[in-house]
Length: 375
Length: 68
Image 1: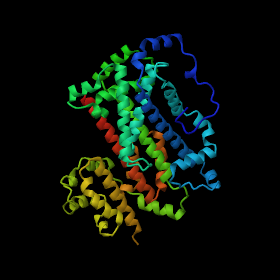
Image 2 (image 1 turned 120 degrees about the vertical axis):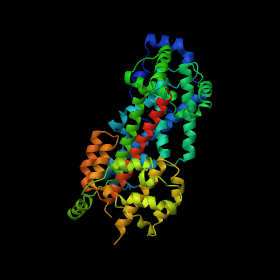
Image 3 (image 1 turned 90 degrees about the vertical axis):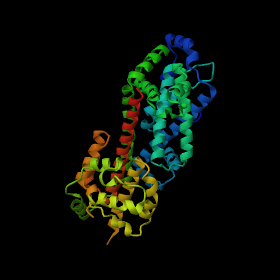
Image 4 (image 1 turned 180 degrees about the vertical axis):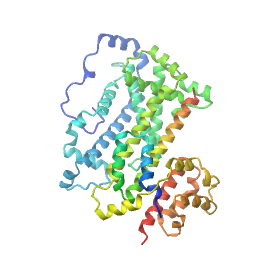
């Protein structure tokens, strides 16, 4: 398979490569025009799926790397290597990609299905259901990119490049959806919203199409164009059905963040009895209602009501808010580079909703760590 | 300073709040009592990010319902 940097040797024939049933062949013949995609879209999909496969390869390599840390260290490799692609090569050398876990990886299997169904024009047209599977895979990629942009993930690609890929994916998704539904999304977008479909990333109607693909994965039905048109009409009226898919995606992302914390941030060495005693002493006692804390931050409640972006004016409000949690803002008088930077960034952070919470969390974390360094 | 935001009770309720599976919650809660200040700070940041994700998701679903 072109595009995959790593090749699995001598795979047995996969089910989807076997002969199609008579009915499926008839179906393809009848609906080939509805399901064929043009050359640019196919090339786009190919690139996107390759990128996604590389990401999965990298995710697998990182997990394997940490699971087999002792063996990795014996071979003289440094587990703290920042070079991510290097980790993939190391894991390849150590045979990680020959493991059952990689070979039976369901996500990779799906990607193989998608790639094998991107066929040259006029020979083997795409099945309707694989169009939906591709749509689903592209949505996963969109979620990942949006998260990476929001978390400012440093992985070698710039924010600009990530945004560019999002645009390409959107273009591809739009074409697939138009082919399946027969609707002109551009025209509808202008008619309904007075603007072009580039905004459709987050609108309900587009999410409805994606919701159908999630439904497909659950029920594994074979769609006909008529069925699709009926389902789309249903989702336009009841978009909460699309929600189940969206819920799942966000949950998966959250769980990945926790996995990263457990594997990368939790210290692996055992703590001494004295250290554990000190920890117990410092961190017991009554807690605070964390949802109130976050709610006040997100919706700028109570002491954070009147923040306006001017640091010297706003300092009081922030100090009062922090005072409730026994965090003295006077820590800022210490000449700490991180905190000075935070103050510089305050003016632009205050303009954002989610961004402000992140800024605040960083500031508070720095204050905690600064306090620890005090004699 | 009394790191009340990072103590066991606060972090335990923060973990319960997160939109993750029960098994991950169990792992975090069992490891919590041994976590030192650095680990707790990182956990706090991670849980905040997850909370913000949840907030973003709710906003997306609301947008979905607006376009009914």
